[in-house]
Image 1 (cartoon, protein in one colour):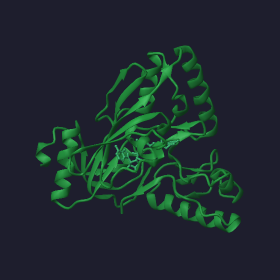
Image 2 (cartoon, protein in one colour):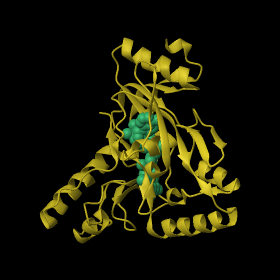
Image 3 (cartoon, helix red, strand yellow):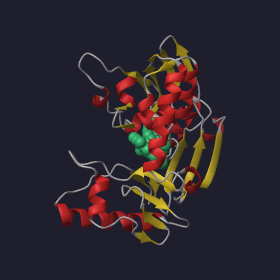
Length: 291
Ligand SMILES: Cc1cc2nc3c(=O)[nH]c(=O)nc-3n(C[C@H](O)[C@H](O)[C@H](O)COP(=O)(O)OP(=O)(O)OC[C@H]3O[C@@H](n4cnc5c(N)ncnc54)[C@H](O)[C@@H]3O)c2cc1C
């Protein structure tokens, strides 16, 4: 069944090559599918061999542990990488880059989702995480989301009639393959101005020059995780190559040679100190996978 995959199949692929933190052991079987049929073949293979399946988009919110991932890793960045525009709607594949989609739409005088500018993501990863900022999340613009069940059949969820996107929970073992997104008409110059401003703000508040995986922790209700971590005295704290960013305390950056164990040690320290100071249990935003 692996032989039927037209995309790439690699063995013992280091996942540090595929995560924005540049950390992670190897995937036993690493598949870069070319189309939905390739994903089906990989899922059927994993099912037949009783192997677990993990999906990676752009790897921008992932900590892969040092011993890597057993089973099959599907990497969707670039696969299903096309978007088609119909009026004010786009149908985008899971592997489309969110930033390219925003730019492509802008060139057609279509905007409205500028609040997602600067979120490094594939559409699949953004859908899985309901990525966003204080001004909105991708789910606010989704009119349909499509996924592949482990048996290879396609499923669809349509938010609406009082059912928000946040009510969507992809079935276990399914792979998100694309969505429909609603834009609205907006002049290119206006969109560009907005994008420029948002990117400037991001650059001044986040450590974009260093390898990271975005925010490690969710903001507790009515609070900012970064403020709590800073108040707990952890800004700039290092374990080997991993550091709690001095620019944004909710980011852990890889200053070079950091291992997942170093990041996990900083996370444990953060969890304990924030709990000791504020009696608050931080909840994880970043996803942790592997052994
Ligand atoms: C510098 C920086 C800034 C960031 N700023 C923001 C921000 O402002 N707002 C924000 O929300 N996030 C932010 N992030 C985090 C990250 O950009 C988002 O979480 C994004 O949605 C991750 O997309 P991805 O394609 O990289 O997903 P990945 O990191 O590859 O995967 C994330 C999760 O989604 C799952 N997944 C991915 N694709 C699929 C699929 N096709 N089907 C099923 N499951 C899938 C994975 O299994 C994993 O559990 C930032 C990250 C960085 C590095």
